Length: 96
Image (cartoon, rainbow, N blue to C red; front, side, top):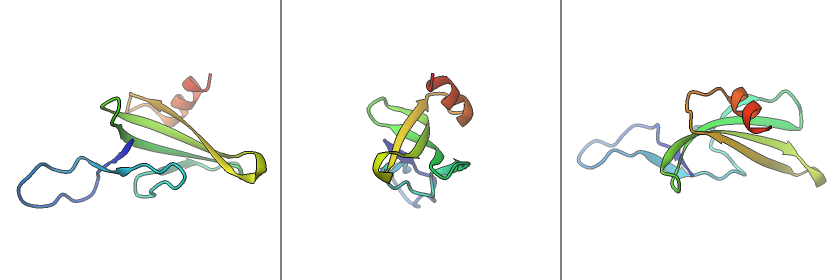
């Protein structure tokens, strides 16, 4: 998966840049990841819009970081192809 490029395009010839770097889920880029919930000390929820190279489509991804065993952060991600879907709806539908 790759971030969708939101920076300023270069001037001149050639195709415009669509995608940025690959996503490192252990350290998200704050330029693209939006922290939507941090109600508990041991849980953080991020929202991203990314490009999936294998499925060739943009995805709406919700990443839930929690403190697991041995006090290490673990992550689970839930995704939807509906880019306008709210992060709460994604979690509600796909956590079932």
